[in-house]
Image 1 (spheres, rainbow, N blue to C red):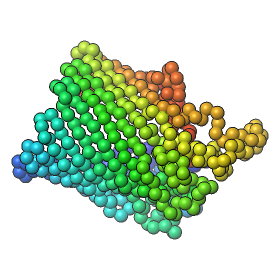
Image 2 (spheres, helix red, strand yellow; image 1 turned 120 degrees about the vertical axis):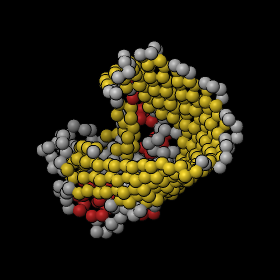
Image 3 (cartoon, one colour; image 1 turned 30 degrees about the horizontal axis):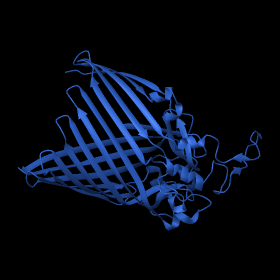
Amino acid sequence: MIDFDIFADNHNREAYREDKYHGKALFRWQPAERHKLAFGAEVSHQELGLDGLGYLDIDAYTYRFSNAGYTVMPRWSTNLYSLLGEYQWNINDRWTTFIGARVDDHTYTDWMFSPRAAVVYTPTNKDTLKLMWSRSLRANFEEEMKAQAMDPNSSDTSDPEILDSVELRYERQQTNNLDLAASTFVHYNLQAISWDESTYQSSLAGTQREYGIEVEASYHTDKTRLTISHGYTKLYDFDMEPDRMTTFPTEPATYITAEPYGYGDDLTNWSNHITKLTAQHELSDELTLDAMLRIYWGFPGMKDFDEYYPYTGSGAAQSTDLYYTPWDPSGDYPAQHPVIEDGWERAYRANIYLNLGLQYKPSDNLIICVTGYNLLGIFDKDLNKRNYIETKGAGDFRSHAPAVGVWLIYKTR
């Protein structure tokens, strides 16, 4: 069982707990030398609307149900039944094919079918080419689907998010110690779900299309492993759902990107360039050092969105408005307050996270680990920032404090 306690004390107030029960069975079968099968089933049951464990004095509540007249969130449940399978055919020493699928049935959706296929070609002992196609369906949030089912003007079932993609990947074993890889992908049909300001719910926003490339290298010896990768993602089209434009331009029809409004052609909350570096080195038989560095090089799409919609939560603002009059009974605010605060441009800069860990294994049964998280924040707190989209716009961020984690792992034979 997995337990989640949810609490948000802002203009979108939420306070409730949900319990999740999950079971999975997977079977493998090889009917012939070059043929392999894997199939299985999953079952998930969720209980929602429970009073939060950490907030016993607050009745379960979510603003999403307020339109249906509920001042207290009722107790309710959902079930998800899934079937999955994959067939592998080793045609010969050079060619291998994979065909798989997943079928999901949720309480508040129709059947969701997610197929995929891949072809693997190994022209030499050092080179491998992989061509992969997939369609992935993902259900909306539980609360969103329930709220839609409660609305007499909506369908009882919720449309899922759909992602159709193609990826081509090349891998090469350059030497016994060095592996290289490069891949490119196209998300040519992403029917994306995002927040709808007019209905105060998450629903289908439009069709998003993007492409990307990634290169990586991995160096490894008996005691050292070092991997570095760099990825680039670019939005090339976004077709808005017609019914989403009812609030435009007073309210954004989607927060995914400002491209439909004529501002830039990037994703709002995603960095175009991302670099990752991981390293592991055995200092001795007992001591191992781990390091991970992630660099999100900047967020031009967030800057574009703020130029389109400079809104900090005090009423509709147009892109030409440089000031707004805040509502504050105490009168502490000036009559004219800048929509974009000084320093907000820091949100568009890079996010850089550094984690370092030391693992000590005094015996085969005992492992002691010490890990430092977000360590670059010691020198500059803005390097640890994490961007997020506030209900009324983009450009918000918070700085995560450096932290240290210590734990013991003991294994019995």
